[in-house]
Image (cartoon, rainbow, N blue to C red):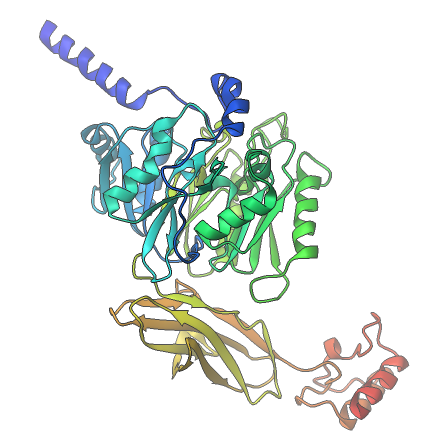
Length: 536
């Protein structure tokens, strides 16, 4: 009996050692605060400051991923739920000190071990988003790893994880910096659109006093291919100044933005940052951004930061066809957040995971995960069709499509009724620019489509990635002044408009096209504007 009791005690101690290591918060510890000034003014010098020969491309989070990394240092119950969902989309790499104990914990919670790889490596904290490996694609399309100096002075083992994983996966490795040392930054304070745009808060400037902004921009370009580096003001109340706590790119042209009640907490400052972006920048395709708002969550007593934790839904993770969204104590807002993601990202599987215990440390799902981009990528750059006119002879779908192994073909699939299937049109190629013409459709028709491309290694990738479960849709409209909806602006529209103003509105009259001069009302001035439009 004594032996059994002793064995039980030993087992309990071993479990506590694995699952109760020294917890390090996402923010600075008191010791790190003492070291911080010297740390940022004298950053470590990398073993090599030589960037790739040609500036790489940093993939976006919504592009194809092969894996995701978590570090088994804290929040075991939450990590288990992330692993449960993530392993259905990618290989999950679990960095841990005792694989067998982690395996037992997973299986005891009903998580099978398929598609999970256990990596035994030293670490300091759970916040792998900030210190983990950054995927980039080299000029030849090969996957490589970029490393920066993690902005926590007392976490050398965390800092070593990118090189460890690069060696483990057999990938080229680059340390991002220059003659004044490595660039200090974090993954939570960076977003990429998959082309050449990057987004951060100005924390990246304040934490790198050894470099001016021009030098930082050049380092980001040389190592990550970021040509346009957009930096927003730090927020007063978010503690860590990472943009993933209040903003997320859902695709090249859609910004998901956290929303506080009017005038509350960081709300005005987030709005100012958003307006700065909207007023000064356009999307990769030269168009205005689409903005989707998602609520922030108050505490159980109704308080907001700085008198409450930063409960945010933007700290989510996109892994191929899966989206993992933080959940908190408020069931109503949780359901609303899930619905917002589902509507914004049709075709994706959206799962909520409770992060109430994690958010007190200023992080959620995005902060404790780090995706690994796919090898042999098929990159499809496409400005989705937002609208079309009824009198157009066809609707051209353009895309720049590349793959390191070359392409064997690309297809546009389109339909006016997704439930009945899609029609296929082979795309024509001219210097990596592919196009196909969808036939003209009648007024008010919804046209849905997606692009599919196959490389010479038989890998097929779609745009959007989840097609055909998800696809793009545009509506065939009529031009301004075309009030009878025949696709043309002519004298018949004048007759219809006069009839409408006389109180005899014709059947089928398109009210949305009748305010020709766009002054907010429909009157005789629109007749004059319509005649001038016809004459011109």
